[in-house]
Image (cartoon, rainbow, N blue to C red):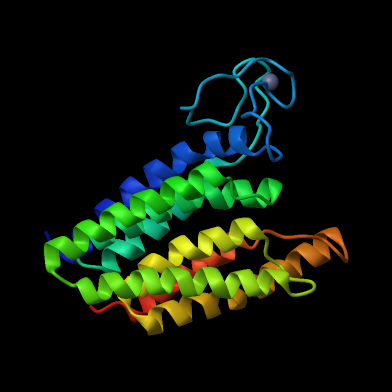
Length: 240
Ligand SMILES: [Zn+2]
């Protein structure tokens, strides 16, 4: 399969997966410690399904939550670009896993400024598993060691940032940085450093829009900027 065919197939799969993340993102957009949303926010009718392709409530018919068109677009674009940039490998699978989970995390973060621990932990476990498989398959154990160093470095750097006064990120972002740092680190130090830098560059305009729309002191999610920054870093420094 040529790389462009693979990229198109990945984009379509990513768009389908992205479509399916919109509804769980709505249900999981709750405050810390609260169970997933189990009632429609408009009519209070019970909602228990996790799989829906429309955001219209089955009872009142009103649209609730996240627009599937946006998550489909993000999922398709992310997966397509990654499959274009990286060779078919466990490494690509790790990046694709994070891009789909990233759409879910990003949508939740935009709504409630949170990156739920269970999702980030699942991403961590999946990423470690796939990168270990990649290293075992290719024998690139030095890249594997660098992945762990990169994850630790990204985690540490964001931990320091998070303590700075007026920092745009919270501890959810610190944990996500550790996970993204694994994949970026596996690809190399330039990819990791670029990924961390681009997150701030991407966040600038986003924070500006939040400021204009909601006024001074408005908080905006930093997670989406980190995810987009990591994606751009991979595409810009990809070996191909
Ligand atoms: Zn309803």
